[in-house]
Amino acid sequence: MPLYAELHRHLGGAIVPRILWRYFHRNSQDLADRFPEYPEFEDFYTRPRNTLDEYLELHTLVENTQTPDTLPYFIYRLIRGAYIFENLAYLELRYTPYLRTDETLSQWERIDQMSEIVEIVGRASQVKEYPIVTRQILCMHSRLPDEVNRAIVDLAAAYPDYVCAIDLAGGDVHYADRLDEFIRLYDNARSRGIKTTGHLYETTDGCYPELLPYLMRIGHGIQIPLHYPELLPEVARRGQCLEVCPTTYFKTGTLESMNPLKIVFDRCFDAGVDIAICTDNAGLHNVRLPFEYENLLTQDIISFQQLQACQQASFRHAFAWPHPQPPAQMLTGLLAPV
Image (cartoon, rainbow, N blue to C red; front, top):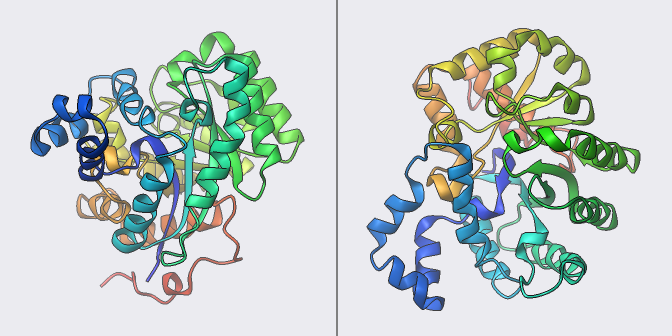
């Protein structure tokens, strides 16, 4: 009974640790030797980090294994788990295609290879026995050169059947010196009808109001209700939705407890700003989407009514959900308070 739409999940952090560890032991002797026993690997892979930059380094461990040859292997298992264990009806999977290309090639050869990556991910995501509606969000990256990021925007325009939007990732603290460049990229994307989201206001160091007008959704955005609530009316007026990923903020050292998220939800609901609850990196956290909802509910961060509103908002703000309404099961009172 599919009930959930996932709007913010990274391909690099979506592979659950057991599958990743088994892959190492079947295909990479160096990594198998580094992580001989599964419990030690799970502890290393899922434990909290001190900073967002330290946390993002974990993505490189996975990105190096996600090659054109191996992407179908990983994506099949990702889709299977999302359908069976998470009841996903819709999934937007985001990643930087350049980081899945052959590192031995020149930059321009790698740019050319990005289209192959998009096609591989698109085909591998169509799994008949697990019929989730899937789309890709292509991530520009704060540590990639402008010509690569421009090519990523061009790629999104070239593959509308596979790609639903662009994103900006790589750690929001690193945007400051390149804001004009990123604004031009987003402006170009919007002028071509490409939908937009972006990692913004995730940390207290990553708050750039100059980028907000160019985004249709805001990746994380929790610092707006926490520290800049005066921006909420404008966010509401634009119809922007926050992609809130609760577990992430403990894994990155951004929050020390769940309590500030109650402020996030209450202020957003009061201001008329929608929130989509997301996982960000379900495998890296070893936490699936239904548990994110359950955890918020059982810790009294949200009510049943807010839970259902967030479920519905995730479908309403999905960039490529093909139906005018969420799945009918969500509207029948199954989640009504008891």
